[in-house]
Image (cartoon, rainbow, N blue to C red; front, side):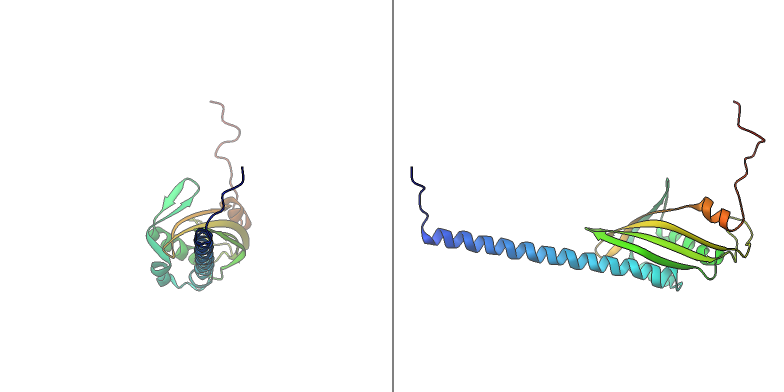
Amino acid sequence: VAPALEPKSHRRGKRSSLALLLALAAAVGASACEDTAENKATSRRVFDEILNHQRYELFDSLYGPGFVKHVGLRSYDLAQEVEAAKRMHTMSSDLVMTIDLMVAEGDKVAILYTGEGTSTGPLMGLPPTGRHVRSSGTTIYRFAEGRIVEEWTTYDNLDILSQIGYSMVPSGSGPRGD
């Protein structure tokens, strides 16, 4: 059985539909690329302007309503995040946060960073030691409508405490024997 031939008008219609579909896919792809680039630029602004230059007033324009930060099993809101950023500079007045690697896909931006500074103020109630500290961590931001609405961050607090001269000492003289 020979295949049925379609009239030229149907073939033109299919080609037009295919062309429209390809144009739409390209536009959506371009929009996604623009969003990804904008999300990366916003992430860089957090590190450069807020964390390194203490422009805390930018939190309200870069972070969205209902923002939640996850660190380990704890969650924080935007007000707590602003206070944490301020405490970082109280702990180390010369703190510099450097983005070592940034990758974006969809509505998320992942960052590997290094923080470096001198212990010039209290950290978790412990007095400053004047020692230099350098530590790395990771942050993942999730964006909605161009603003950060969720964050997951990890870093090694024990490493930071050790570098500034504190160590974790067990409370007993040996292992617990319950």
